[in-house]
Image (cartoon, rainbow, N blue to C red; front, side):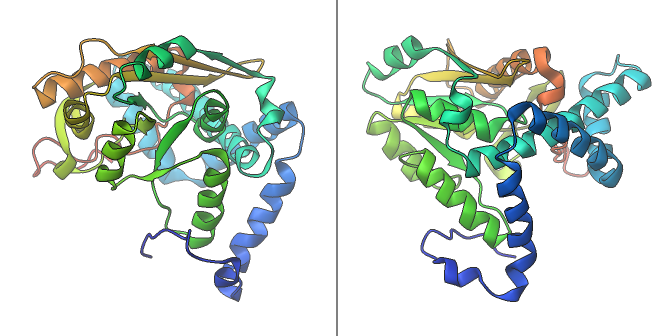
Length: 306
């Protein structure tokens, strides 16, 4: 199914019977979003355990990634981390429901934000600010909470399911003043020139065409090269966005990325991967280990490890 924006579509475009199953599950998601926070996390943990059993392909991807990134980890340790990861993923699904269907005030009291001075300093240069980060399970909820503190333009990826796209794009219109589709590089640069904060989760494999090979947990992997190039063109400072689920709520932290960019794409990619490794380590279970991070090998003839 082709991926395309639904912003120009009305609800009437998605009332045909073929869309009813998706609407049914979204209706359930809407109801679940209004459960108490701790109840959501408990149910999310059980949902994650169910997904662990029902999604063998994703379970294998997670196991392969952990073997590559933590070769010293025993099989027993990997199994425990995999279970915790799927539990966190289940919780993340509930957090996404909450971010889509519930007022952001609900979670605000549970959220700690550190780094307003970092953004103010970055924007004082008048070049905008490129916020970079990694994919963790509470990404949707923490992104919405970040938007309560700073005017941020997230870069997003369109989904294949048109109904999900329709709901997702409208939710993001409500949460953010502006969003940018991932392929729209021109709009990214324009927003930076307008002194906006642009948020890019840049830790995934976006294909050979858009990448260079740099170490990630000591293993060469395709790493997006656009970040260094965009900052070279725009002269925008780069800030690292770290976020996490804690026992009492959520923590959002912004820090400067120093000595970036250089004229070397590989050095830039390596520098960012080091930053991502640092924020992954304290909360390994919350990272997106089910993404095929190493699917494109440096040698095109080498098979995918998955």
